Amino acid sequence: MFNMKNNNLLKYKNYIGSVEYDLTDKCLFGKILFIDDLVTYEGNTIEELENAFRTMVDDYLETCKEIGKEPQKAYSGSFNIRTTPEIHQTLAEIAKTENVSLNKLIVAIFNNFIEDGENKNSKQYSHILKHLTKA
Image (cartoon, rainbow, N blue to C red):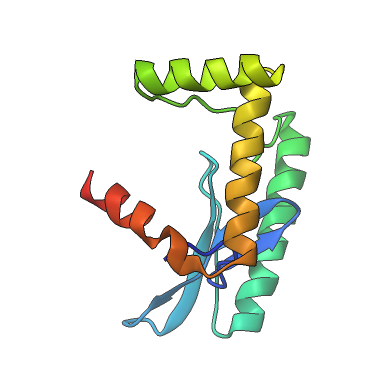
């Protein structure tokens, strides 16, 4: 189901961390998501895991500073989209008609999608996710 608010993710200083459980060791663990560097943390309770996550984000940022490396950002705000030529043309025509750039049109469409997902029942997007899982 489409849900913009995932309660199974940790967030701190624009970084997102996973929450997982190891049944064998009976401990919680996770890693900072969406960066290439491997930064992990663990704890026995949710509070310990949250504290370990924040500590590791701070440690990651400090280590990067010490070695003169730019810390990776979780998201750059830039990504490529692949679609059909027909959809590309239709969107370009709409943007031209509305006197906005194609980029501004796509951002407006994304914002509308996100706002709808946050303000309405997530079931309305379940058909989209079902289609994506078939691909």
